[in-house]
Length: 337
Image 1 (cartoon, helix red, strand yellow):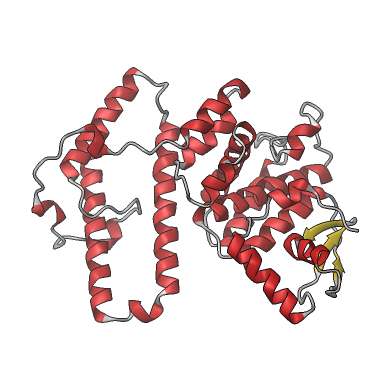
Image 2 (tube, rainbow, N blue to C red):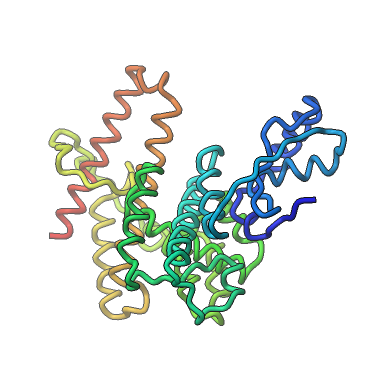
């Protein structure tokens, strides 16, 4: 009998009921588990669902692959990397797995160098709160190198990986405070901002439940703050677009740009009065998250629909979206000057 490690299971995105049923039907039909169970120190590293099905159908044959890891952090990093390479993931699941991999690899490097630290409890390790190696430690260079390597392998960026680590900590902290909310976040059932999720882990333990519950509240929109004004079609004029001017941010083709800029300025005035609302880091964090979301969604759509992308009407529509986005950014830039 193999053992199940709750922390290992926790890193693996759950199958839906339909997906699990289909997997069970496929295995029962084949009469054999085609993919081996991956085991380390008698713990299942990969194949938890297959093992559950095997226990229900003992007549089904299966194989085992023994894998070696220097420690459990290296095992967790492998689990995350393995899941990233073989599953259809939501953007939230992808970000979480990248973050968990990054934090686990930092821990693996720290363990190898003797930076286990005794100021944190083992309980925190079980919960996945990998924070024993702050970036100010001597091995910060290793953390930077780890981020760059993960970014290259996952086709993201150095900053994305770093933020993903903070996001994963926030998801874990929210789940600890409000059990069940992790699944809501990672499946996209609720869509809190990345900064709001990360803030849960940064909050004092006594405040985490309240912050986690707030993640379930719908986001406020600029249109909720101010009445709608007549839309000036000239704001979406695409005649002067220059792609070299672009810095990607969230796309919104029908927004009233002058109103949005005024709204941004009003928020800036409020922040100057009450810095407890948000910080400069929070603002940049939010905009960075929007940029990464845009890139992820465009890449996914373009990669999964090549037969549609080549159609003339689709290409024309994409060009218009690009032009509108560029003009939006130029207006934002003008509003900041």
